[in-house]
Length: 180
Image 1 (cartoon, rainbow, N blue to C red):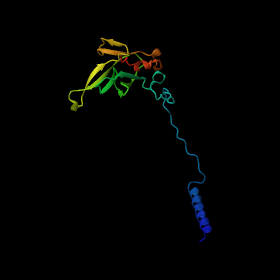
Image 2: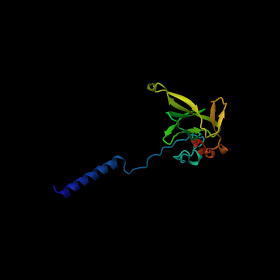
Image 3: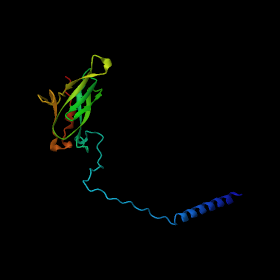
Image 4: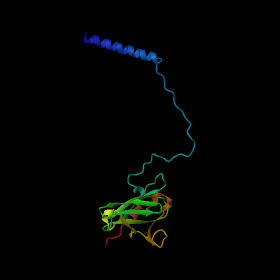
């Protein structure tokens, strides 16, 4: 059989299959039925098109849907310290060790005044145990308050201007005391 004759036979067979499919489906295609549903009434959610900046300090902190301000804190790193964390009444936040000689960590705070301090961890005499001895510290580059029921010494997170995250002086909490 020649190639032309094979092509016409295959083409004719395909046309027959298409025609029978159209007849089986009722002829011409029709638009699908749309599904409708009633949506619950209530408050409109937050505008999700706003994206939090990748730098949490952009514009003085970022406001999260959880209702808190993202703030970065710093504390000088001293010899033999192997861990550090920021302590607030709402919880403890881990801090990272930077080769530049300081600890840094991020916390999510409500835009209101708050106390905070740091805990730094030192290895115990039993190195094999893996336990750490934690000691309370404050950042001496920030105002220190004593005699609080919260801790012997604390730093104060000041309420931002206007009670909004953009009013936070974010650079202040990254301040480190002079080395000399």
